[in-house]
Image (cartoon, rainbow, N blue to C red):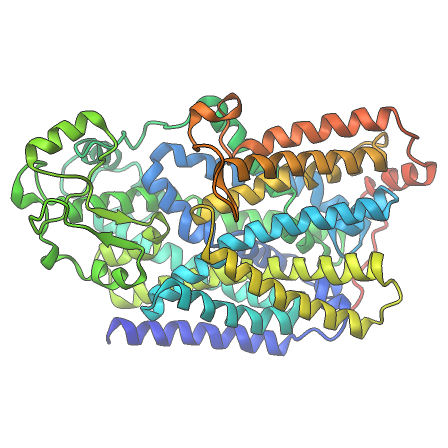
Length: 588
């Protein structure tokens, strides 16, 4: 069967499943819309959390970043994985014990202040929109490839699908849809990885193939990959390309940002008991590990296959560079999306793919008659294109398309729900119109979700970076604003409302300002995004770590010179830390 037909069938079946689940589990109360009635089983919640967590950044972009950055891309693996452990042990059970719907509700209650709740809503909206921009970018990429259209058209189609099941189903619908999406995405990620691992090394498990010898007898895969890329002027694959301080701060920002992400935290409000919150965090970690331990192998195999497809023999031999007219089918299929482009700079009709930013290699390239790198490959397509590059069967390629869509849609839907809850529940019900009826609140939530989809679509079309980079900015904002307020709210009785508000605003403004200064969101960047210009050599991806330190420092300093925390709130903090007495399931 033709690839396009197979893709339509597999993706169409997965869509039918998601929409059927969304309709079956349609939310009818605000409790079901925001926290699925607090009756989700821990294993199901673990799967839903894993799908919520493993977004387009994990499925589509992370292995692509590792493929191009090599060892330097490991910060994303370390940060995101470590962050999940932090979340499971430090925050999830205590937040569930508190028992409210949303993060702003916790902050508003703990810091006995509607202003604190409002600041938390503002932080949450900034974080969620930054994050969802990356997801919508991923949605656009997958749909553009699947439908063979431009990315804008793919984005609009994706927005329509998200609208259907996020707005209708609420958290209850999203939870069970995400369980199905997890099954699809993990199968779609691991099956091609196993095929390619067998093809290249003869090893069944990608994790073992990563350190194995190649079946063609050319040695260990990573040694061969180092040779292949350095021959074309790129840095060694196994050599780091970031400074130690930048690696430290990026990893820290991703870790603590993970623990402060509102759309992940809210998942722990959906289980019946505190013990279930811990249990579902453990299950989620197991489910996440299945994908994350495959990612380094997928990135390495993708880079090797890409380079060897273009450069088929010794560098410098004319016939070693493939002719453009004889380009593989996968390049032809991706070209309409605009995410892979060829420009014949020396008019020889062949593709030269090399590092034209390396001055030493440029001298060699001049001798070969090359006039610059002629192939631009968007890093975000590497995982989706990997099975095509490796000439895997059409059903595997179609399966990956379905998995990519599942990953992008699941997180986008979760984020949109968090935005809608922040506006309808925290802002309207909690602050502006406290007497609003449940029906009107539910309607406001759905309208907010619909508006948020429109804004997210715009941001997805004009993202300030690759999917994983945009997501890293969201983690930085979460690390610098919400994480310290939540952590101090649980473990410190000294932090008062004035300190928490000042800390959140300081962290958010500093981090957001730094990112806009170098990346330019809605405006042009104000300085070149290069290490020489960075504060202490820390990149915009890692600046959330500095923002977090500022948040802590300002919160403690302001709390010291302002009135102490009321006794009843101090008693509340003591109660949150005791893992007994949490409310059971509300309804389900």
